[in-house]
Length: 288
Image 1 (cartoon, rainbow, N blue to C red):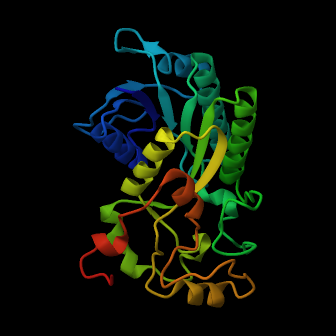
Image 2 (image 1 turned 45 degrees about the vertical axis):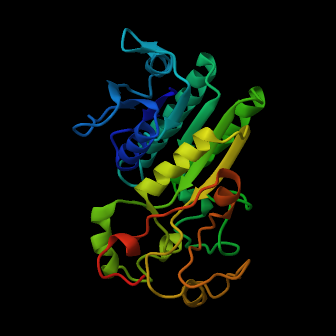
């Protein structure tokens, strides 16, 4: 059995990741400052990730609770811009990620998956993207301090894997994470109100699938992947949405129907990622 530490395992995406890993036979340790939900199938330890000593202990073993860790999933963070002042967001997120990367290296853990963000693609797209569907091929375009922190984390990952070419650090650029209760709001969404991320989203269960596939992949080095649902949050054809709201943005390839404009082609190709949960399949009465 592989022991995986999941930071932020009490959060929206973290809960789904812990459940998915446990269901697939992993021994999971949830490291968070927030308490876990009742009945979560994981050990829980409260850890301040801005303290390198605490992180190092969490990734090597804590007293008689567990000893040795095989892999790390790092999800804990201030999850969006504006929730607290920008400097505090940067100080928390970038320092915590550095400590996870550094402690993993000290502990000999070479399998690290962490939550980057779709925001590095240029969200909220006040400056239009160079093309659509957007993908991992153009340089990151942070437009907020939160996003700048994620860009810094990706750059750190490049150097941590340069220092140890056998290490794997995979950054998953998750779209807007949703769970079933969130889907009740989807019929109220408007094209203008959701243009900020090209009408994208990701079901937490498919986000968890992507995490597990990244852990199990035989990749080495740093890789970034966009992780999104296969469709958009709206019923309008995606090509029509792009033409109306971003008339000067070319399509890099044809898109069909309501296909996502956040390209998941790389994740499909290299990870075997195939999202199966969409808001249309989870919301009664929605158009298939």
